[in-house]
Each structure stands twice: as C-alpha cells, then as structure tokens.
Length: 323
Figure 1: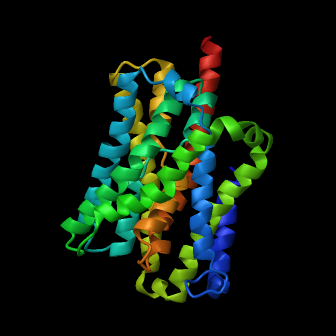
Figure 2: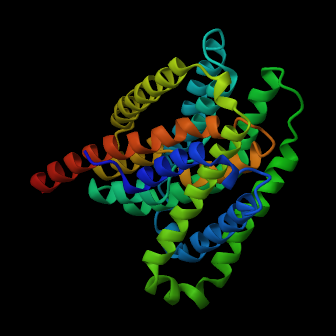
C-alpha cells in the first residue's frame, strides 16, 4: 500500500518543524499561526459553498441509519476513549491519553466516508447527510466531551461556552456563509476543484506544522517516553479493528441492507482530521501539548484510509458480482 500523499506532506511538515521550529513558533515574524486561523475560516467557507443542500435532503429520511452512525461516533467511540484515558493513567502520560480521547470524540469525515461509501456500492445520499450532520454536531459535542475529561481528571476549569463560541465563530459561521453564497460562487468552485483541494490540505498541513513547531520550541518531547508512541500506534490500530468489527456486526443485527451497512460502517468508523485539527488548534491553543494531541488522529487518518479502502473495494466488487 502506498502512503497517502496528504499524510506524506504532513510527515514532511513534522520533519521540518524539528529542523527549524522557529519558522512556525508563536514568536515567529512570519505569523503562521494567524495565517492558519484565517485559512481554516476560508476552508470552511468553501466547504459550505461546495455542499449541496439537495444532497443532504435526499438522505434525511433514514432515521435508523442516522441513529446508528451518530451513536457510534458520539457514544460508542467516546466511551472507549474514556476507558483508555482513565485506565491507562498509570503508564501513559496525560497528553498522549488526551490525544487518544480527543480522537475518539471527533466527528466523522465528509469526503472520505462519502467516497468510500460510493466505492462500496453503499447509500451515498445517507452518507452525505450523516457525515455533514456529524461535522456540525462535532462543533458542539467534541468540546463538551473534552470538558468532561478535564473536569473528571481535576485538570482545572475549562470554559466550554467560550470554546464552543470560538469554534462556531471560526468554523460554523464561515460554513453557513458559504451556503449563503453558494448560488453565486458554485460555478467558480466547480471549475477550480483542484486548487480548492490544494488549499484545503495546505491549511491542515500548516496547522500540524505550527503545532509541532511550538512543541519543539518548548522541548515538549523531553516529557514523552518513546515507548508511548509505540503504544499509541498499537492502540489506534486495535481501536480501528475493534470498531470496524463491532459496527459490521451491529449493522447485521439492525438488519441493514448492503447499501445502509456500507454507509453506516464508513460514516461510523472514520474520524475527521479536517475538523479535528482546526478544533484542536482552538481548544488547546494555549497548551504546549497540541502537537502531541494531534499524533493519534494523524496515525488514525492513514490507518482508516488503508483499512476502509480495502474493505470498500471488497464490498463493491462483491455487490457488483451479486447484481
């Protein structure tokens, strides 16, 4: 399997952050942190403009599929994250455990889950609806779940109202504005999809780069044991395998058709780096551990692409033969 080019670009950014952390650190004259914030707003504006409301309405009626996906994303996953965060406290450091929990608290992807559903001959309309709703719900639910962790772990006051307001201002408001201006700019967007895709990925790479520059500048890695990265890698692969198996079996219990099973599994299992990185940059803006917190979602992103692509190809081929 070839490594995803997007993931490769993030790895290059991480390497560069070790070689020259001053480029993206908070005191840098280049002000990359500010540029990344405005870049995030632009990306979510374009996401809003690119999203067809008719496509969302088409998949809105299948309430059993919606219940399955949102429960997996915001109940099943966070429960696993809670268990890991508290039971691993004796041998895993706080920022690594927080990063794992944060991964579990994130919303589903939009582009990846819809694409995978299409490849697997699944319910694309349902995937579009649920992935979109998941992303919007995540703006509110993800910081709420993080606040529970911060409170239960006695980590001090976490201003959830401010966190949700900041996230809504930076992500949701541009998204809504994009929907508003969609009739005016959609033709331009359709003509320049490659450029927009490049901007989208570049902003995410910039967020990762800035986070790691700050971590390296503050010498955070001296506080993390090397074996913890190995444990988190094993834990994430185990998590993905367990949730894939569980969602497939539960989808069978629900009596889903092939189309709904495919949409349910891929929307329920995938986690959004596109939402996760910007939200983390807001939630943990004052934390020197942001780079470490982002490691689990970066690992999970590549892992889910490999595993789900193989599964989607298999399901799509089998469904074509049966038809």
